[in-house]
Length: 445
Image 1 (tube, one colour):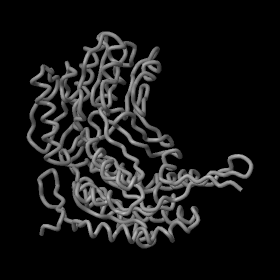
Image 2 (cartoon, rainbow, N blue to C red; image 1 turned 90 degrees about the vertical axis):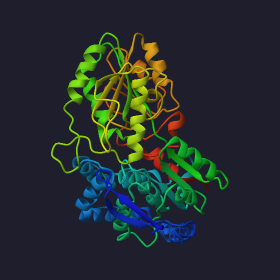
Image 3 (tube, helix red, strand yellow; image 1 turned 180 degrees about the horizontal axis):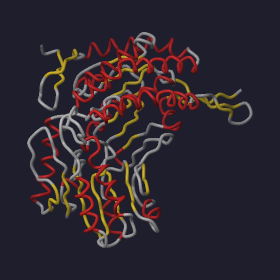
Image 4 (tube, helix red, strand yellow; image 1 turned 180 degrees about the vertical axis):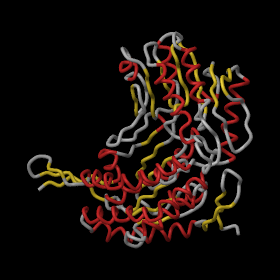
């Protein structure tokens, strides 16, 4: 049937299940119901909303094994990482709701004046496929606790995970507080153009630009995380073994399908050869396979489209002189084997665009200024990492990214998740990010 959105296993293209596509009329009806439900939801005390949301997330535990398996089947994630995603969402919910509760409490700001953080109305959440539960969750919780209702439009690549997620939450939450619609970019466009109050989106830069255009006619509030092409700089005095371990782990995490994956590594000439040797040794230990095979580190890419995208980058790099230290420029779908390439240059796709595959791409530098210039020569600015000692923090301060780290990964539990340049428009996470899901009101008495 044409009105069915069929979900397939990326490992073998077998059908897993299907959901009904939402028409523009369906989406308008869902938004109308969410708008009506929002009145009663906003009328609840914030502690009552927190209690209900906490209970709803505890309800996920009853079906956690099913959600884990569904993530593995639907987007190819190995069982261990799928388990981390599901259990992380369940276990972090209470912490997140408490953090949000603090952020929307009226706060005295001088005699007779207070700042209030009030609901916006209906929040449309458009979530990606690479972390189908966690990415949606990080936008849904602050929206709900702030007193908004939510309409989720998940990626068409992973509709079943999201559908089950919303059904389980809906068993506890009041009717129409959390809702779901399904479809491709046309469904997303219909949601953006509907009678909502805000769009919270995680996805590509091009999709974000389209959302901004569609949202402009009604001036909907926007919070968008728009991907990255994260650089890593390895200085002359870095712990080479630690830097190599991080480069491989970050580049290969979730088969490289992570917005803060390390996409390009710039290494000082004095440690370049030994760094490459260590990276190849570590990368060679990774095992590719199906989610239910033992000791698998890298599963299939989530879609044929994504597989072709990675191959395009690898072929371009090979054509322009990159050296393949491990792996090759072409692989049969649905896998990309662990790949390490060196001698990347700034005219290659792999240096300029987001690859989103298990590839460590390395270049040599002579001066720190050269490394910083190449790292910053990008429209993206989500994360950046520096490994080194004496000047590492100084170099990190020169990086043009929303999240920068020295000798480790970016981001922390209570800090905003924020991108610079075209990697972000607004931000979420932490008290500051949660407040973006509210309307600020100044009350003077």
